[in-house]
Image (cartoon, rainbow, N blue to C red; front, side, top):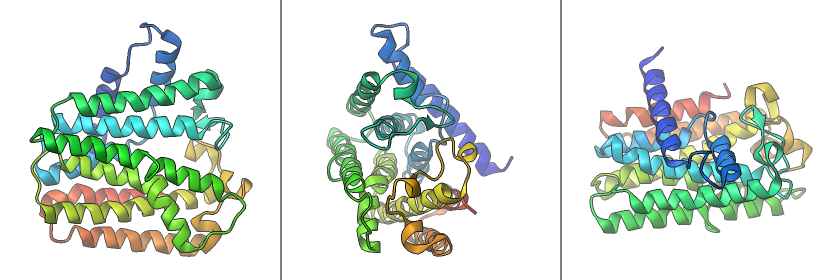
Length: 295
């Protein structure tokens, strides 16, 4: 196992522990809802957003004990979005992370409540734990995640996505959609990790630019994987985008050019970190990890 792989595994293990700690035990009422919440979050996913938070925290010199709670909050928002996205009113998918989606395993009403409860729990953690050097910065962190998840971020991007089915988008329109739908929460992951310690504006600016590049690269790679990988590899239904006539980087650019774009975004992400010290190596490695999932 490489040193980077060992670091990833350690962070993922820590995240599993902290998420299991924060999620209500399944035996506490309402048991059905709590069981479904744990089903939606635990034992699955690469935890890319928490990994980015931990890596950015290293750049800022943050205590990992602080970062883990901010990372958990982001991951809970991500998990809630997947539960809702998979529902019949959205993408209507039956498989996620290699197992039945929440509305299939439980029921639609429970899936809706799971998403609501996970979102609430995320902000409970972010507001209740001592995460930042002072209360003002921690309040900014709460607002940052709220904006990333809301109509000017992830939810807004999903609304644009739903409205774009069957309609061709140009590259600028597609990027605008994914800056919101995928990129906003990835950007929040990086910035929340960095805000867990005092950090100067120049470093924050470099991290923000890096995060924007990685957010788009992540989506480009996802589009390539949806077109080329198998359902077994993805852990979710492959080919859904094309089947649903959704605009993607592959439908607009084709696979070869989409692959080139992912590489260009990786190079831009690396360039954004050029002035940062050696402790930014995890972010560089994560940029490679995000892009090389497809290659």
